[in-house]
Each structure stands twice: as C-alpha cells, then as structure tokens.
Image (cartoon, rainbow, N blue to C red; front, side, top):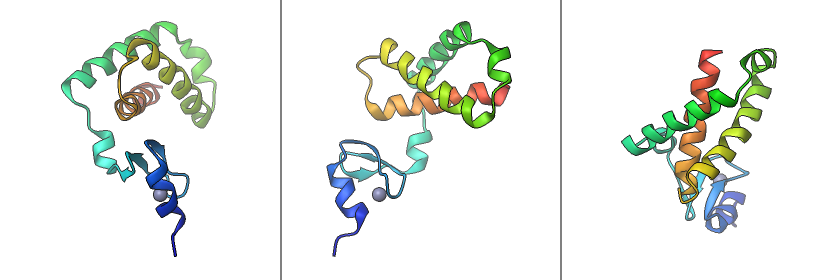
Length: 109
Ligand SMILES: [Zn+2]
C-alpha cells in the first residue's frame, strides 16, 4: 500500500512535500544540509539581494511586526526579488537564497 509521501514525491519536479515538509527535487528528497549550503556564486547573489532588500525595507515597520509575520512577509518580498534579479536560477537555488536572506534580516532585528 502506498503512503502519502510515496504518491506525492514522484509528482514533484520541485517543491515542498505537503506530508513530510521536505524539499523535493525531481522526485527525490533533498537533504536539509544540501538546502542550507550556498556555493560562492549563491553567496554573492545572497549579498546582492540583501542589499536591494535593505534599500526597500522600512525597518521600523518591520520591527513592530511579530516575528512569524516578518518571516512570512519577507519571504514573499525576497522570492519576488530573486525572481526579478535571477530569472534563470533553479527553484532549489532560489529557495537557498530566500532562506539565507530572510535569516540574515531576522537575525539583525
Ligand atoms: Zn514527503
């Protein structure tokens, strides 16, 4: 008998499995350590996105929000920025940058 993950993973080209919440690439689970790892090019992209984001962000507004809301809203903004600045980047690399940038901002609040 197939479990829910068994049905979900093969269908996912890239995305988060709604059952186990892990990232899936071409039907395979991406280890958490691999999602956290940034290549030197991604490090540069992360810094560039972070700089653009800080120029747009009203930190006093952000500071007044609960952390969960900050993370959610930052994530949407960063996803959009990465899409605009790096349209050809793979979904997994985008996820890496989005996570890293959101973490950078939240840590400094
Ligand atoms: Zn799963």
